[in-house]
Length: 229
Length: 229
DNA sequence: AAGTGGTCTAGACCACAAA
DNA sequence: TTGTGGTCTAGACCACTTG
Image (cartoon, rainbow over all chains, first blue to last red; front, top):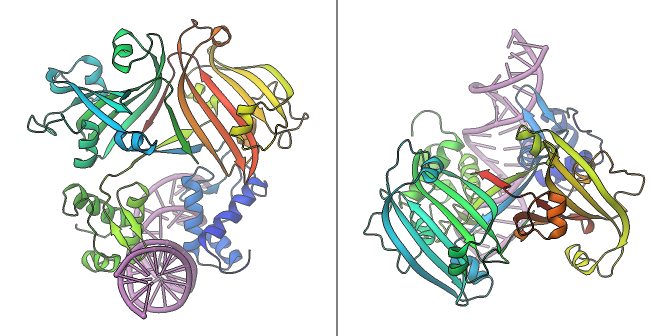
């Protein structure tokens, strides 16, 4: 530890002590004030460093309880969820889009559950295909609360995926990643063999407590979702 | 905006202006100093709020360039990657573990690539099964750099997954999520039908530039990975 | 060269939770 | 009740990057 004391350097030193077991799992580490004195910096600097480590899962912090090294650290991986068009273009492929259907339908039971609806309500049901180099890339099956995108909003040339990201600020929601089998319909739409293993994402979006949309994205075979930490 | 000005309240107001298009996509927002004056708080408070929004993808910040609202915000979803045992126990199921094999093997080509090895080297190859309520839950196929877990470390009763998380501090790595088909071997091990769609994760872990481990986790049918934002 | 965000400081008060 | 982290302030200097 030489030169100016930055919060990054405090973070690095704290991380070293954690992995070197100088601060063993389960133990309480010194208070912010003590560390600030030891490092010769302001408490705010130590605070920033330890807060950052806590966000990454390396430390547990509690008022009055102090700061502890977790027995079993919980790693965190962050995914950047971009617009599908950008995903395709980022792979160097030409993006294409085709709207398959767009109807107002009473929400079926699973959608009610996903969007926390007490009772079925009319939702806009969309199906659209995203293409990469003219080959099917991803099937988008979406339910939209018409209060957020009435019939004047057309999804012929812009996908609901893109329109929603551009036009609404979400406040919350959930993601669910899973594998599913291609049935006859999926195989036909995604131009793959029936029985192929497909990667899929279920996603719900809310604005405050208002349900905005629920969507299932089913990707063509071979899709891999990648992230770094 | 009443009461004390906290960084959370500044964040909320900024988010409101973004979603209300008072700060339209692509536009530059006022400087920190101006906002601090407007909200009647210190610049550090504004900084904390805007930095947080930038981390969430709602703003783009650059020195000298100022702060802008992105044209296409990139959502970020964070997954808590816990030990498989905790994952199972968190579902209220009884956890079980069975080591299937553990041999020193020269790393095959795909593993060399994943771990950025210039040439094949001897790695510890492990196969183990994680059980939930005595049913197969997840197959762990792992390659470990013996420098980090020599033969004295036994994985009979503790999984490599858990041992590594408890004993090493990672500095980086990658994740890859995909869907795969159950072949005869997978079907046998996971006690499912051949041809089932399985959710899988490829993961690599490094300490600085040192490769630690590469692993493929293949989950039994029906597994869903869930997160909230 | 100059403007903007990034960060540090020293001090203060507060909120929460453990004792 | 009390100790700990959470946060705010006012001021300062610095680093990056754009014009």
